Length: 352
Figure (cartoon, rainbow, N blue to C red):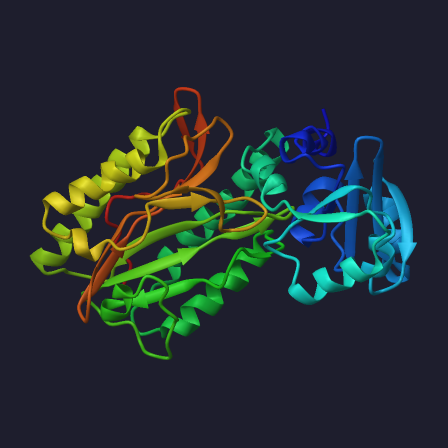
């Protein structure tokens, strides 16, 4: 069954006659279209894809299983005329202004119904082709980590290293970095989403490095914390604590596992060591066409993991004004465990 067919099968759940999809990531997932202006309308007996003149030829090449309709650059008017009955729209991505325009131009009797999250639910479970792209992206990032061992860290600025990582990802075959790389030494590493600075990386500290590649639209995500020389006992103990929590959480991943319980495996280890308040984010998140998507692993998440989910396992401990440690793997959930896609070592690596 195609992705579009599986999506249409969900319409009854929301009592919808059709569904409007405008978010470009979701449009790509359903149709294969990679342009910057496109949308689709799906119903039980119709699959329509709309784009403007600039992308007609691209749509012919990329969009195979939809009826292709040429529209103006402002697709909303043309889209509105294609809606019927109870028409679902993604209320997480359609602006108030766009909703107003759809309401004004829709045919009489059309009822716009918020129906966000349906495509995202399908995207959570990856097929073999998606997993292959993500594995390729993870392999590229692993190779760049190995390259970093050769180039070194000490005396280079965080920003210089981050820019070099981005270039290396593309040089090794990524279409782009999955996100701007994070390089954060010493106290800057205590900021989970630190911004690389024009500050030289010193010896004898820890450096948090977070990067990923994008291949065929799919992302990887991997964090390692590297040493630049000798470490104080406290910093080394902190690293080993996070490593223990991370490896234990990876071992808890399998189809059927409850998200908050997997989070609790790592969180319990860190809390027992007295650092619970320094692990303030969730254990992980889904990765795919976006680097942050469902499912989530966090204290408040009740849902269960399913085979084919691809999630990060990334506990961290952040000591303000001192140091931070985060270790992150990207894993694909299987029936009896998980397949770890990231391969760079998690034992403490020293790069001077």
